[in-house]
Structures are given as structure tokens and as C-alpha cells.
Image (cartoon, rainbow, N blue to C red; front, side, top):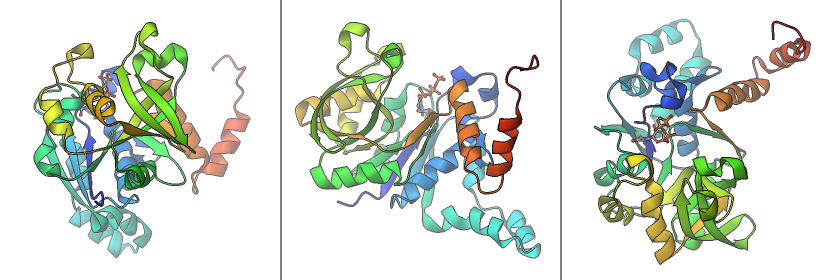
Length: 292
Ligand code: UTP
């Protein structure tokens, strides 16, 4: 069955980047000139997704405004003959339908996905975390969809993380299948040292089948008192297995201060308009200077 739908959870508080997130969702933090969530929506669209549900919360109306039509701005750009900018703005609205729903309480990622139940219906669907930007040659969501089409099982996108950081992520039990594909048969969220199954951790993307909703409805709050998506996926992994793709791509967690800086610097270096000038600026920086 073709994967046409994606869910983008974007209702978290973003406490790791307060005070910025008090009135500005982290999903709207710009990398150069584009908000984080637009990178995520573009990845979905470039992977063949046609319908997107963004799960938001109170105070995040700016996200729906961003994806709304802006007739005044569009007519000004047309009048000034700034057609490239106009094309950029119209690119997404011509290619997909974006819907919104509210997660009324931030009860965790699993609960945010449960809010998408009626939107998803009975189809398999993609999940892209709204604060995770992944830069890659082939969109990571597409890499996962290809794995789903090949194995007909739910898919998680993962990478190895440092042993001393894995307690902040999740850990997957995996066996190698071929190339960058693995079979995943168990998983644990935020493991203590003795519970680590491998250093592979889910990073921001997965393909789920609709049976996840019944499981989520029965999933009690886990780590941090939140309904964890990992706790629900664990049942599917144990029952029939999931596929883990060690994806090609560089991921930036825009809910983490250091990664926000890395994203801005690394993406700026490849930017067609400012890349060269920015590279020269960095070369000229005197890193030994007292001001730094
Ligand atoms: P995170 O755990 O990174 O987001 O969730 P958070 O809860 O905002 O982070 P901190 O710890 O407070 O800094 C990954 C994605 O899931 C969404 C977030 O918005 C983010 O895009 N999320 C998380 C929800 O939609 N609802 C929730 O209840 C929790």
C-alpha cells in the first residue's frame, strides 16, 4: 500500500531551549532563512507524501500561519517581479495538503501520535519529528518508505549514538539483514547501562502501521511520566519485528542548543547565496582571541 500520509508531532514544550521556546516553538527556529519544520515538511513532500498532519499545542499557531496562504505577500512579490521567492513560497502548497490538530496536553510523543488516529485511518503512515532536521541525498523518509515497500513491516530510522549519551535516547535490539537494513526485535527508551541492547537509537523518523493506535491506547505512561512511542513500538517489534534502517544523512536536533548551532554553521557553509562568504568569515575568525 502506497504511503501517502505523514504525521509531524510538534506539540512539545521544548524545555531544553528555554527561554526561546516560551513564545516561539522550536519547530519555527530558522536555519538560515527557513524554519525547522519547513525542512521537515519538504522532506516528506520530496518522499512522495501527499497529506500531512501537524500535531501542535496552544501557543503554536505561528506554525499554521506559516503554512497558510499569504495573498498580500504573494501579490507584492508578483508586482516586484521576485518570482523565485514566490515560487519558494508556493512550492509546498502546490504539492501537499497540510492539516493541523491539537494535542491538548503534552502527554508525550506516543500520545501526540495517538491524536492522529482519525487522520491516518487504516493506512501505514510516516512519522517525522518536527524538531529533527535531516540533510541527505535521498530524503530519509523516502529511504524508510523504500524499506517498508521491500519488507512490508514497520520501519525505524536509526543511527549509532555515543555510549555515554544513549541514556538520553533509546536502544534497539537488532540483527543485520543486508546493506543498511537490520531486523529490530526489541527496544527500550532511555536505557540504564545494564539495559543497553545496541548503540542504535531511533532518530526522528519511522513508518508505522495503523495497529499502533490500539497499542498506544493501552500504553501506560513510561519514562518521565509520558506516553512513550517506543513503549508501543516495542510490542510490534517483539511480535512481528520491525525493520531498522541505518539511514544516510546528517541529523540535527533543533531542541538541543549545540545542535542548533551546528545546523546553522554546517548548512550555512553549503548555502548557495552566503556559503563562500561565510566560509571566509570562519577562516578569518581568530579562535585564540580573548573576545572568543
Ligand atoms: P522531544 O522530546 O524532543 O520534545 O520530542 P520536547 O518534549 O518538546 O523536548 P524537551 O525535553 O521539553 O526539550 C520530539 C518531538 O515530539 C514532539 C515535540 O514537539 C518534538 O517535535 N512532542 C513531544 C509532542 O508533539 N508532544 C509531546 O507531548 C512531546
